[in-house]
Image (cartoon, rainbow, N blue to C red):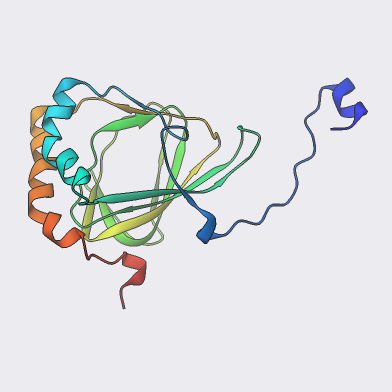
Length: 181
């Protein structure tokens, strides 16, 4: 920052930054703290949590780009395996999702490559990955945001558990939709 920037209160000029997929890192609690994990959610997701501890992975999220200043653009790449049902949740910032492979059901809508959805901050949602799973990009205009679990009633938790039981045996060797021939 130059002396003039400090005096005027302007931020330093942003610079072009190249990023590579190979450098993406796993998303962790520093990138997206999780809020609202209560006994009902833990109980309802018991099979999935035990499966995750046993190495049965149903999802993957990577931080591809995050502005180093802690504010600004954030880009993530997510992969949900076949039939995976997300818990209902919201985020503290707007998000734009863009499907790059596979498909997902969002309510009555089927999202395929090239489709997407804008989810405003604090709007709750869930989605179900299609038969080959789904990969998408997540664009946010904030680098600091959270994930708040809400409205995961018994019926939704059972839907998540049923999907886990039905698909878990396929997940270990399941290729990404972008890797299918």
